[in-house]
Length: 459
Ligand SMILES: Cc1cc2nc3c(=O)[nH]c(=O)nc-3n(C[C@H](O)[C@H](O)[C@H](O)COP(=O)(O)OP(=O)(O)OC[C@H]3O[C@@H](n4cnc5c(N)ncnc54)[C@H](O)[C@@H]3O)c2cc1C
Image 1 (tube, rainbow, N blue to C red):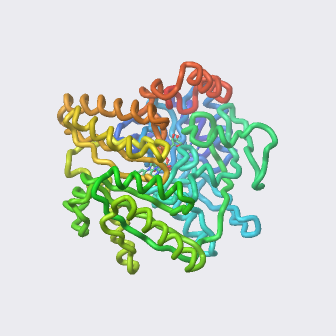
Image 2 (cartoon, helix red, strand yellow):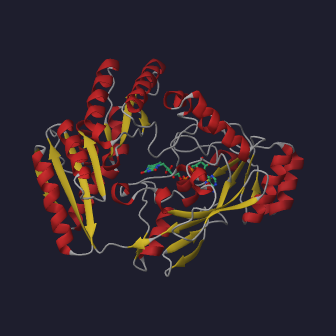
Image 3 (tube, rainbow, N blue to C red):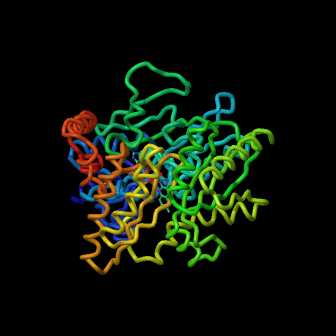
């Protein structure tokens, strides 16, 4: 990048907020995909006005801008794959601006870490449910732009269900507001709805207004052991269709159970076909008793072999440890996992899992699965050897089959990780030419010069 541009940015936001040294370029060159692309510079804007001035200048000079939260994305959304400027919010734009206890909303800057918001609202008896497993470091700006989900989505929904409004800067530097602090707002297009999950391709989010709820007073954790994946998947969709709404309904298949046991020895049933982990919550004991009874009945009707209610906090932590560490445990099967997060309508889960077993056999590759089955979201992990290009190629074929299967079953390529660059080649499976053309025209309306996170999402 020409030094005149760097000098201009320094003038706009201060020298101490613009970096083009090797260390910064390296530090901001990756995300959880482990792909690497170095930016030309990293800028830490102080406020919305700085962002507006930077974008105006970049738009005039056709300089690429990539907004970045914590860089925990799994699909390369925050990677500067075409070079340009990284806009990072963790230095200045990381404040909770308001917790409005009368209207039950929080107003935050994009760099606020999810866990920090959760702690702040829980201290005063409120609750922000979206809890991606990356909650200790991922930011609300990143969560909104990926529409992150979490363990509690089965009952409470995902990030979009909590966004009431946002402020954002368009690529030409103009500031817009989308939505209000109100619960209802049907005036005009739902601009916030377009910006959520847009992966930083349409506008830079500068402020987010989130809905809060009262924190439930009681909860219980349950683990069900099933002989087969099919039994477990039947139990999932029948539970969710029964009208009781567990907070979480998480699943580990046999390969995942064995991997967790091999790595962490938590006493899991290694011969089980699958386990389901479920949380329920409420404010009065009778509510919880009713849900527990209903859950046990449905699990047992689907050949549950052991229905265990956690006795104390230690047991709750042990059960959840197994689920939270499922992903790292899979390294016992290979040093590279091609992990996807397909989602299908819940009643299709039994078919999905039985077909994935066939794909595993077809390519002779292990495909351990786990995930948020309460919302139909399954993490499929095709395990390959990093240093075997042939095996990696076969792995990608298996992934393509998995995507085709998900779409055939009425599902989607991604339930929470987004498209970025990693899944862009598969958009053709899920969207028609007309639908892709519509996406492209939306992108063009926001960003005619294609400076904001270009070529992501297959655009
Ligand atoms: C161990 C692990 C577990 C995970 N578990 C989950 C999970 O349970 N559920 C889930 O949904 N995801 C999960 N993820 C994926 C990831 O954490 C989420 O996608 C998260 O929302 C990304 O947040 P981030 O702050 O890291 O954003 P980044 O990865 O930095 O960015 C994500 C996208 O948002 C855009 N963006 C960021 N900030 C802005 C802004 N202010 N304005 C415009 N665009 C912006 C970026 O350009 C990029 O396209 C996990 C990741 C890891 C590594």
